[in-house]
Amino acid sequence: MSAASTVPQVEFAAVTKSYGTGRVVLDAIALTIQKGEFVSIIGPSGCGKSTVLKLISGLTPPTNGTIRIDGMTPRDARETISFIFQDATLLPWRTVRDNVGLGLELERAGSNRRKKTTAALLELVRLQDVAEAYPRELSGGMKMRASIARALATNPRLLLMDEPFAALDEMTRDRMNEELLRLRAEQKWTGVFVTHSVAEAVFLSTRIVVLSPHPGRIHASFQVDLPFPRTALLRELPEFEALVARASHVLREALGQ
Amino acid sequence: MRRHLVTVANAAAVFAALVVLWQLILWIFKVPPYMLPSPWAVAKAVVARFPSLLASLAITAEESLGGLIASIVVGVLVALIFAQSRWVRRMLYPYTILLQTVPIIAIAPLILMWIGAGAPAVTFIAFVISLAPVIANTTQGLISVDENLVNLFLMHNASPAQLLFKLRLPHAVPALFVGIRIASGIALIGAITGELYAGSSRVGEGGLGYSILYASTQLQTDYLFALVFAATVLGFSFIFAVMFLEWYFLHRWHESARAPETE
Image (cartoon, rainbow over all chains, first blue to last red; front, top):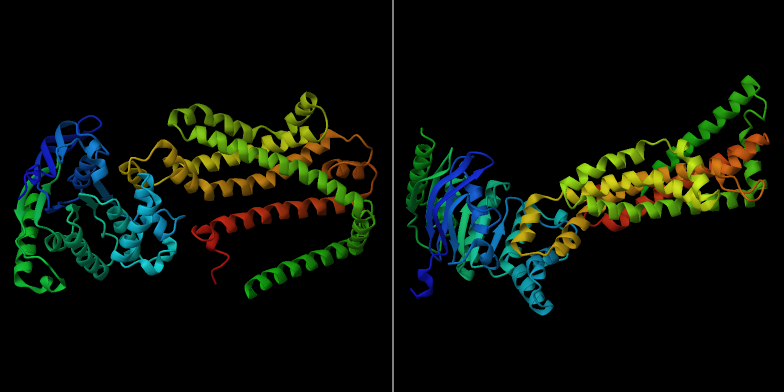
């Protein structure tokens, strides 16, 4: 490991978040995510999973405690972060190509670099054939791939994903999971992934963090020691099944059952 | 395409049935022509006085179009101000409702008194009456942007100008068109209402509203019907023009504009 990578990608120290007067969403969160990790955050609804991502991205400030992203404040680190939302959140009046190029355009990248990067990413997510189509002509899976391409176009070091595949059918979701791992192998970003699908979390992650609700606290955190590259076949292995069962068990514990 | 033809054929059939009914009423109840002229008499009046009919139509079209364009420009600017903050909206929104509820008939004489009779005053009345729907719909379009889209822009350090021109304004275009569609109908009503009061510099010649009033005092009921018919045609053309523009700008991406294409 090089010297630079000793600075954690994400560091939460005693972070508390409450909305309004007294509704505590997250309580005393201490979380360190090293560079290169893929961490999934799972937990029942109302445990503040999405709030963790909003705090990392600086879209909302913590009530107490400090957050460091690669040693910087979340606001300063923004250029190195991309966010993928639950809906594809594409601009309907733009073609797929112009949607993928949006981030670079907003960051005022030169048009040459924009064209090249956009074309490369369209190819990477296999959307080059529908580059000039409008979002409404795309299937749910294709929209999500466009959304991922847009997030990766700005070459992020940290990728935040808020249940990006929740609205997709199971087969599409599985395929998207495999694609996401393929992209990660090529691009080497650090991932923070919120989901309530245990199987999805196990398939994607190097580590799973389980939150318990009311207020949101870290209930458990464990490594997923399955080797990469992971393919669709992994889902049929007993080790995979065992980890899903274990994660489900921990999740039930978190709910106090 | 065939569906369009069927729609047109249906509309034509209804029109023919109404004309027949109209003629039947004349025959059965023996209504005198100055109360209700025959369809044939109205058609003859259209042909015989076509130049003056067209002149009236042009005047009213110009006034209502002027008022409509003014209300689009001003309405969008006001909506941009409204979209800035909830406080501004709370303070000023009641006044746009006032714009909508004030009876235009009641203030038309006032406006004429202030501006003086003629096309500018009538244009102004058309503008006032058609402003509220543009403001209301555009404001709604500007502020109803998905929160995550705003977050997406913020994540890329978008400037306020980028947020406005690359997100809020394009997002508001479908709502703006809804506003324009409503406004185009009532701008015409405003213009005709204004003309009822505005008079004309030359006796017998003016916009549709003026000519309707003039024809009724002269008991030229057949010409009066022709003028009402012209006003209806004008109203339809406005709506169709707006719908065409809406389709032209939105059909590639917006769901509402797709309806005519789907089978």
